Image (cartoon, rainbow, N blue to C red; front, side, top):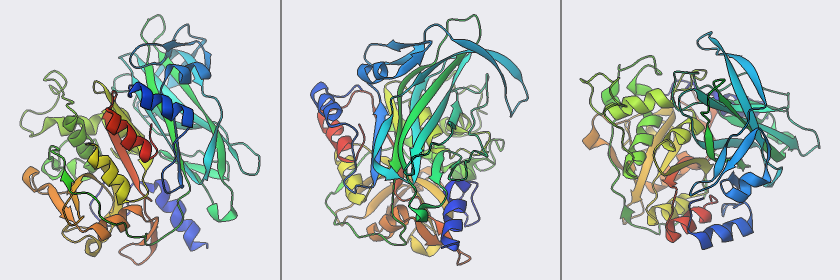
Length: 454
């Protein structure tokens, strides 16, 4: 994201919230079984509902048309016998091509938290010649239904289609803002009470290739409007050894991907945690990067998280999906309720990528203000302050920062703030990315369950 206090391209919720204000599987078997028995997990804050389809039983519970359920260590869904063929004209290249397709539709999930917002995440393998689309259809608290909303058209590569969000989706009750479903006017009391997901898997006609989806789900939430949040009590002193990468050393590189490194906080943060978990890119994968550029893996992350409609690398689910292209990694987008939740994760060895907006004076030591920025939380000091790998740093060695606990907690968890012009703008309400292994230790599984993720 941009470091400046200019309006960011993430109009996702900023425009909507500001307008509203102005107007008034791989887990330990026993732990996994317990999570399934308990149903969708909720955060301690009671404001968040997570539901993910990951197990063989999950995939069998859906309705497939031309799909087959894949067994093994990572159960999933893939194309069996396609049910049709379409022509798709890529809006970003103008190229029209024919594709065979199959669909899988989830059962209806009733939200434990009737929600004002919802964000989908997916983890998949899309070999060359394949891609996928994720859609959401919901029911409101007034009994009416949403249309089928496209939450993303995605491929790991960029040779067949350009991965993209879809603009101009609304029914005058809700709107899709890049990667986020949002109720247009939460003050009316209208909420999303249930939803279904639909996967459409595509492949070139006449081939046997197929996308395989291992994980798909939604985080629904109803976070109250707030300029400040309650302070949490420090409870952990630990720091994880996460690689440090600066986005700033990439300024001007590959400007076709959101004007180069100045806006690459999201992929830079993603790459740090991917490598923390052992994810590595090969020389062949990096061969396209100018050999004069340091940390070519950051350039690669920017290219392969880039959303061609949003015109940026900050699409939240696209970053999570990118992380899951690395062997045995999963990625989700969620919200957390407090720094206590982050401490729970850090204690289990799981770092997090947090999204926040702030004025320069609101985060001591940052040295900048931003309308939207991602950084990696890697630990806590003995005093409870936040240790972050902040990619908005002049060099790799300077990436490690210590930020005051109270300041960090507030800028990350609030939903409303004042920008540099004194106008009300939005905050993310605790949005974060979590990347973690496909096979979890019992402690890691328990920590994720404690923050509402299974």
